Image (spheres, rainbow, N blue to C red):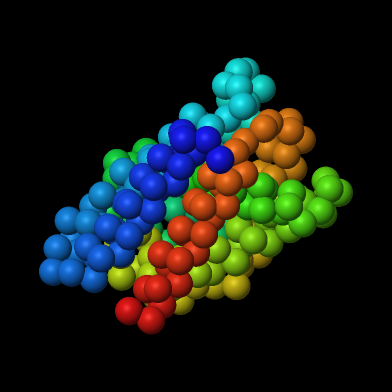
Length: 207
């Protein structure tokens, strides 16, 4: 493992652990406001560890960004796809009611779940479906804490089944487009980001 990778992993976990401690502390509100920073760090770590940043890699990353953002905009403004919900204030500035960082979040989740699925199978369609399944599982985990963290909340406080169906279908399209371009990422970084997301939200199921 290179020194660059080691430093990146240290930075990632430093912010994750600090965030967990901070949200448990009386300074919870301030730490939750830093959520866009944490997402930005994960995204930057993915970028700087790409084997090469070129037109193909930028197109690959733009697929989940624009697909995810567009679908979220349809959800927030028209109640389509996911159900009726609204975003809170802790994900940063919004465009047509959707935080810009949500698009970044779609990129992060697609990249790390794609890398995880690649460890399990070499068959592209199996990787696509597994990646979409893992993204949907992560969404179900995040949904537990989203309202209390002022990320987003569904009308009536109940997440409809259609949300998870839509997540799986849209994530499948995102994975198909992203994985078709076969860009080379750093799987060690991806696995650490995936583990950090899972640990972070799993902890807050019980805390």
